[in-house]
Image (cartoon, rainbow, N blue to C red):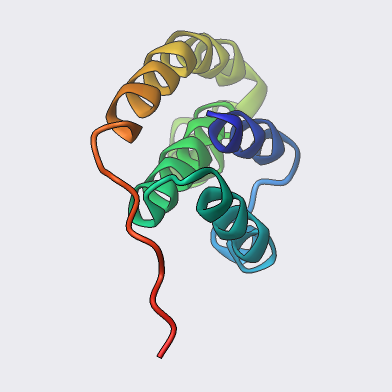
Length: 109
């Protein structure tokens, strides 16, 4: 849950695709190992929480904005509403589904 909230908040400030994962992966995976969370599910929690701020930052809609002739500020109110609705739903589902897999410690060869 902490990883999901942290990632969603950081995604609002730094809208990056996979570049943040390269920096954050070592300590996110280590903290998941320390608390006994399934590592595969930890990555999925990170990915789902990373996608939430994309609702507020409509960078994926830039071509559509140009074609329709509207500005990003005309849509941010709608996208913020979507973010506020989906944030608790996604966090609840991540919390519930995160408990379904048991912890398997990583194996070092």
